Length: 237
Image (cartoon, rainbow, N blue to C red; front, side, top):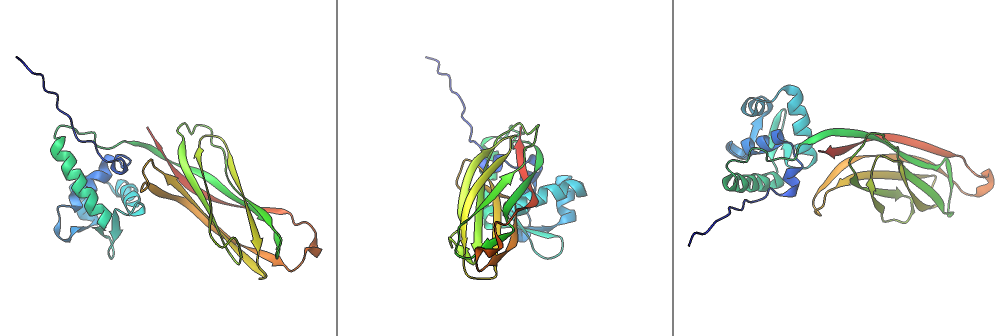
């Protein structure tokens, strides 16, 4: 009796699939050198990267905490980076003929985020604050995004959060804060892009602003002010 045997291959962990192939090669190289660290020029030569290409790759690896800079132009694997090197080695051993190890990223997309808040808050009175993201025609891949609003000298003391699927259209979320009896409130917005696993989190951007607080509402209704900043969203093929 003849038996047909099908070979099953190990899959690359999702957090590594989101990295471009050059970033995976940098991790592989750093896993082979002494003390798991190397100079920029040595990395570029080993992985065949231009200065521009190295800049794009190393920003992603540092942002996602795979690599840290130790001194001028010296880069070292973090604990997560060392774990990822081990995962890559296991994957490469199981998939010797698979050259397409990464899920190529089409590009890094910039979106504009807004924080809209009354120009003057009133102590002890609740106020609505809006965090929004402009629309972007041509953004053809949804991204899961989380927004966190933190406040100093206002209630609630714990950060408020909201998550949503960002597409080409605009988005905004409404939060409520109540200023304490201080002269100013500091509002901090943090925006993250999420992956399907709990650990797949990338910082997309953020900002903070200080807003004046009045002791009473004698000043009447204050107009709204909008503060903006650029955020970066990864769009995958």
